[in-house]
Length: 197
Image (cartoon, rainbow, N blue to C red):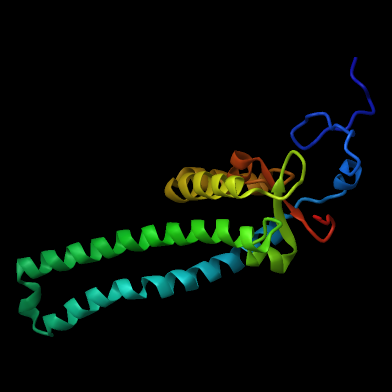
């Protein structure tokens, strides 16, 4: 027979009240979509600036090649030069994508590990943080790597359909958990209501 007074966590599992501080930990509120998107936009702007500064050197080789061409239209009729230019642009494109993914992973794993409480700079500014779903404790570096590499970089960045599904999940679900939150069993909460000690 099911106990009517039993409380359940967000996944529907019964909550164990044997820990002294668990009652206090129940007083949290998930971060709403506006806060999450605000934090993500701030983080994305920082990542774009870092990416731009890092990839600036990639364009130097292409700039030198274009400067050596001159302004004569016959340069572009030369198939060898045109093929070289095409290969350089493709290589630049793929390097820029790899740098983007690498910088994004590094930012979303290293910054929360340095700041603590699962916070990036954007999350810190809007007062939210990432915690483990089952006990609301600080996210370990291993879980951050799973969250970012598997959830965000691989599933959401490289594959378009899961990114759309993940975004829709944030709008539809009452806890605003995206796909990378579900993969890593984390939740984004408002830290001004819940104090991680």
